[in-house]
Length: 546
Image (cartoon, rainbow, N blue to C red; front, top):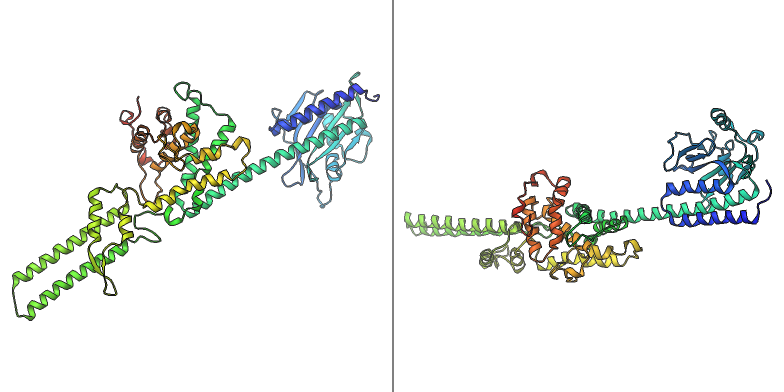
């Protein structure tokens, strides 16, 4: 073949440029590999070609894709025929470099191998090539093998071309030095592109792993929040997909791409990352009097002291009667009756505070008054000092109207969302994940502006943040692993969530889709205990019209 003309070189350069552009934009690795081989064939007018990738242990070359125009052969790749071809070892049985196979030789020495006629070269073992030719009635002649290395010189694959052809006659010809230089340039660019993809993939995997590491840290602090961090993103995506599929109504224009889904999923995973800074005793507070331990046991001791003192007073009174030689059975009976009444009163007060301490029911005004009354009782400590039965801290905690957290502890818990926002806004998010802080940081905002931490109103919030707010609430209502409550049934949860849709807490349009598309049921069947999944009468769900 004569030397290439300037126009032919220009054509090859144009093809190489086109491939370079594709290498920078195509993120589909299997398709990219196939296009690399096809471009290499096209540039050199090769009849066939094979691309090998290095194995994970870097000890062998693995068949990836093979093409042959004459035989109309397409193996491996994106849609090619599946073929089980043995790997080519890079190290022989004696631990030395494998130099018999031309692909292994090129890989081990990082050199291109350009062979004009494989049947006249005795350096390499071409028995496999000869068997192939015999089986398919083919004639392999010229062979160009080029190793592919990353920016650190690590082998990532080998590109091998077979039978360069003369574009005018169609006859096989040797690969020229120009062919070799073009393919080496292509292999270099391809290796860089593949390495970049691998690095991006590794960085993404590392980031996801770090995200899960944060959740592990939260989970280790409190096993009661681990499932929440896992389930909220699941429920978020169920509702988001249901909204995406909605064709009518106020949210008909909402849609998501795969990148949008990835962004929302990441926000869901990270929505409570700020809890890593929340004290364990607050997160794990299962009763109103719990700090490091449940202080209700201290009250038990005081109640026993009250009982003991009451019994001692009665015995002293009895002794006084006996010493005065007064044998009045009526007086003694009255003392016993009074003692039993007092002991019953003490025991009733203890049972009341024990129940109130659990925090499973909203504290009524009458209960608050009774706590205040009991607080004024007197008891004698070990030093003989008279003390109010309840100190100010105990009164404050027992007077919590709902749940187990007092005002200060509630502020500490609520601060987790501010910490979440600070943590997420401190990260240099790439463009396709730049909304993660807003989505994750808005799940405690309300439609009426009474949420926290920023007091945003509905029109100031994204649909994604509103979706996450519903997911967060519903998961919390149905969760059975909380230290301070039992998981509610579907009916109970939907009634509460429906009331929130009516009072300006959550988006009523999203709630309608949540119910209408039965997102709640899909979630329940996957994550809730069967005992909680009851038959829901949708006509009784507030804020929902059948």
